[in-house]
Length: 543
Image (cartoon, rainbow, N blue to C red; front, side):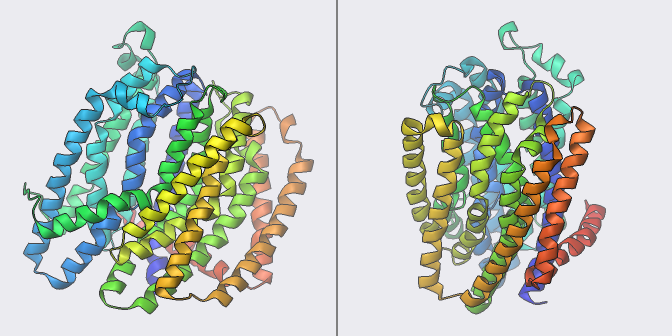
């Protein structure tokens, strides 16, 4: 099978399973928004959830795999099976010990952890509640890290459906905890001043994280890998993974770190109440696109690139990267424009229920505007960093990520001090978007100097067709939204139906112009959908 076929086959399954997970994630966030709105209790929960969630998203979206998979691929190619399995066991139990200590310390020193990540001390934070929620949630870092390692092992064998589906189980547990028959007994155990559904949701985060690990273990055993305790901090291969892991966390997770910095700035007293929650929900809406396609391609790309590099096929590696960039650009550029133009109706339909009011919608729409501007860059970073990781270079993305983080902090500071009245809670989102473009530009310059040019004329031609198609889509979306009179519809069903029509008309215009311009990416994108349908059916039978 050609590298294009292998990427499409793997990414299609990951994309569809991830899409199901994102839908479950939306239902989870919708339940949280309905119960807590953008209240101080909601900010406390999102703040407590953000700290381990930062680790979850950095590990689950490739940082841990980026350090483990290239070394594991080399072992599979060069070493006996018993030695390779011993390497897996040592890595697993070493990581379990380290993360166990981190989990205990994070729970014991919960107060200090919360204060460190709320440097600006906003008056709208319920500190005691945030500390309690963090104490409940923080131990999940143990299960999150181990689940990510097991996923990396399975991905190395080109098993993608089950690891990608673990977040579905996580989301379903949180959805269950959002119902009264679960949260009322649990929150009744707390003191009267802290009784809130957020306590049950925090417990759900811990249980759901554990479930993400345990559902993968049977698949690991079926591959002949048993995880009997075996600890060795002096094994050279394990130490190699450790050396790669530290910069990999930073390089792969710089977007997550920047988003976390945004939340720190959102705790400022200059920010409106609900800023933390609005930034979180805006990011979750954007993740529906970013997670479904960019992360799917990134997950499928790393094992393939690692095997290509191990075999000395650098030309194939460059072509695989260029192909992935074109596919993701075809999806994310129009998606970013669509989110900007239809952000108000999207947030209103998805979240404006219960305690999530029209003011909450306005606040979240503002954040979504500025995050959407950076969507193509966020996606491109997800694809270019695996190229470096496949060559066992995790330091370069980390160094460049440090420059991007510094730029994000500087921009956040400028926006908070000088432009907070005009940008409001959108300042942190805009800072992250600009920092993402800066990050990708530096990574691409290093990539070009190290590996040579990709097919620049072909990419420019594809990009021009994508831009023309996007402009046609934007014109249709703008005109339809202007004449739709969305605000006059007072009931959910009518609003959802109208939003569906707006999205369908805009998407149809984009695909129609892309077809007229004979965009090669259109047929490849449709192939992802067709293969994903068949692959998901097969994967469902094996779960």
